[in-house]
Amino acid sequence: MPLEQALERLLSMAGQSPVVQTQRVPLAQADGRVLACGLVSTLDLPPWANSAMDGYALRLGDWTGEPLVVSQRIQAGQAPGPLTPGTCARIFTGAPLPEGADTVEMQENAVVEADQRVRFIEPMSVAQNVRPQGQETRVGEQVLAAGTRLGPIELGLAASLGHAELTVVRSIRVAVLSTGDELVEPGLPLGPGQIYNSNRRVLCTWLQRMGCEVVDAGILPDNLEQTRAKLAALNGVELILSTGGVSVGEADFLGIALREEGELDLWKLAIKPGKPLTFGHFRGVPVIGLPGNPASTLVTFALLARPYLLRRMGVQAVTPLQFSVPAGFTWAKPGNRREYLRGRLEQGRAVIYPNQSSGVLRSAAWAEGLVEVLEGRTLEEGDLLNFIPLSELLG
Ligand code: AMP
Ligand code: MG
Image (cartoon, rainbow, N blue to C red; front, side, top):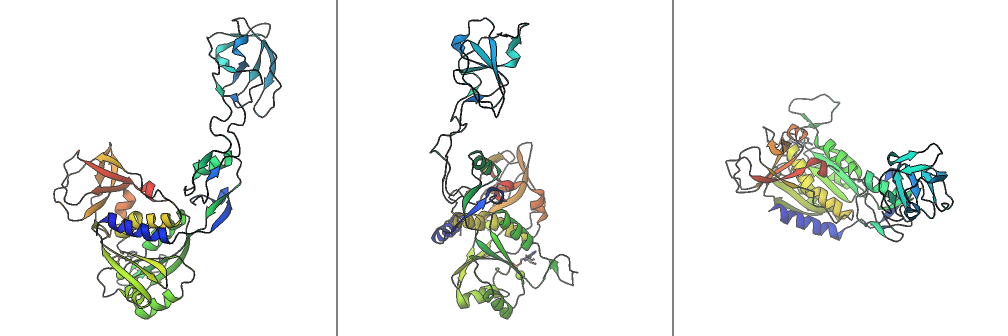
């Protein structure tokens, strides 16, 4: 199955089960969340014309070239009286323009004469260095659309409009299950044949960044009874996200248990890493089963599960930013699956980590992005390919 088709299916399913509940949260807790309704400005921003410079405010029409008397001093935070005609006002950055003034000259272009009058030494144009009322936004304008992911900038914008709280989409509850008899949690000793569970940490941390409520369901042994018991104990979750056990299934107990009480599709994705992916339902709760190899987990989460979750949280724009860069490596053997190589940019060219094994998470720690090599393609150095920054995907 081509990636696009899998994504389309997932997104259409996500569209059928959006999180509809909303909640009010203080700005300090809104990072990573999704705005539930458009944010409409109740203010003009700035609320009044103000000075963009430290200098002098005047009505340009009053200026004949002769020095002007300074009739008042206005600092940020003060409310000035009207400007006395034929004079200027000392003014500082962010201070309101006095009524009657239309121009600000910066102090560097002003000379204070012996009699304290001020001479302006450069030609001026009307409205220079003035930030007009409402130049950023007007009352009634929508500044953020519903479905916007909130980050430092959006939250700052909301703060600039005086909002202490925002209405966001309720967090989606996601259970994370790591399947595999070989898995041990860090902190415990490793027995023979065992490895530490890394996928759990990757996914739980990633989901938290995305504003999800994570139900860490721990390790699921490769055992049907325990799998049934674990699934039955998952209450109130809205997605079950598992890793491992999805290759053709002798040890696919999750698959067996899910089929008993729901349905499960196995998709063979035409991507590398990350060929097998399952999608199904358990007692009505959607289940996404990601492949267990750490780089496969990462790539399939980034390209499929993440957009699926974002869409359920009400985000429309789920396609990550990507851009075209010249290859800094060659690719001689065309593949029959699309590859997402872990790479970085060096002098503007994409280079790849030497070991692209799907078991090697270190490749992704080294990488700055996913380097896309289309199926059937060979590459010479300098050929253009798509680069998806990991920074774009990891939130
Ligand atoms: P599986 O999909 O269960 O066949 O697993 C594929 C490979 O990924 C095996 O080498 C597993 O040991 C490894 N693996 C599966 N789950 C994890 C995990 N949570 N953390 C680290 N490696 C894993
Ligand atoms: Mg396994």
